Length: 133
Image (cartoon, rainbow, N blue to C red; front, top):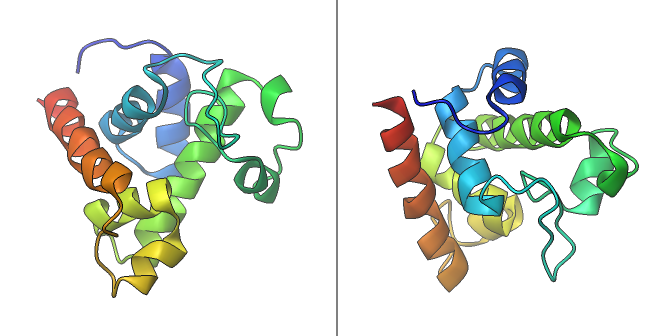
């Protein structure tokens, strides 16, 4: 895999969560374009675009003051949680990461019909394949 920004931090998170580094990098690329101070109108912040409530649930109390490593690790832990919740289905886990697990469940364990999510999942998967080759 090509060396991408924050690669060492991604390797640490991948090791701690048993996720592939390529998947974490793909999420980071789509979420923030590897910009550690990226923020959204909805309140998501950092490389993995964590929502404050999600960050807090994983013990990151000051989202904007946390390190890049913390942001990546919490995002990876949340992504791993979504993979477990959806029985290892990467597409559903990514949809849940983007739209929330409730939305995936609401639409009978399928990708919700939200335009953002319908675009998000294939973007991440395309980069994931690129980074693994």
